[in-house]
Image 1: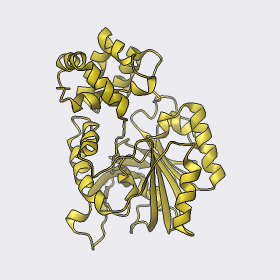
Image 2: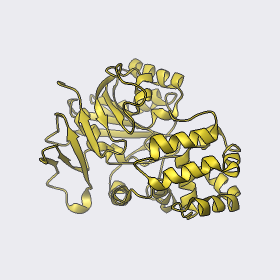
Image 3: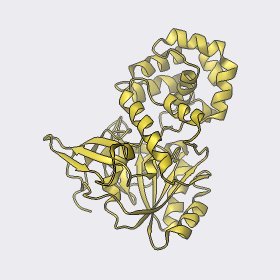
Length: 339
């Protein structure tokens, strides 16, 4: 992740400040407690660097029912169950699947004429591959709400995604015409597996009860829709995934989407990823942090300092910044003046 430092303790201190402060007091306190604990840091350093992320550790601790509101008790559990927790962290990955991101990505998707074929990278359980299934309510700064709901759907067929909006985003008046979809993930999540569903719940931050409720509702709806998943990594497996999607999508526009996914690549990997998408001639919609977006070659970010967009993701379409959004889709600030 972009906040990761070579020193594990500093990584956790920085993560508490940049990621958790203002969003999860419990995780902010726990991350700082980990940073101060020589035993906890030593435990983390037995793991590969890619397995030391706070979200992965904290998700594993919650799997073992750690009282994460109590850092001292949680660290005690970490020491008691170190072997089991390490095994789980080796086996699992951070796969937060936030359907609400569809609410802030849909205006970008609406700029493309249909029919559309979607390929999501880092798809997890594929909840963000169902933008045509969810219902939406966008509320502007004056309190006016724009709604999008399929009248043929009952309450049990969809989940309402709500987001605040600033600026003048082109809020769609109809759902996108999605004719094919495919998810690519190193560890695809089977939404019919109770353990997989439980793991996704463990990844939701403890104070985010609205996200937990939304995830539970979305996991009830998603199995009713066919969302093909493919095991693979990007950028290496993207060409084959695009070819597979094209084989079933006919003349539809191919749209590659990624949210909080390219952050797991190093800078060279991000540049290769952007180059691969350019070579494939596909549309791409990204929702990533500032530095990650810059590494991907997104235009329109030149004037921002490193901390100017803290706690914000950049929404982009085909390498052009359209605005910023809350990382979990709570709100969208639209910059673009025209399509």
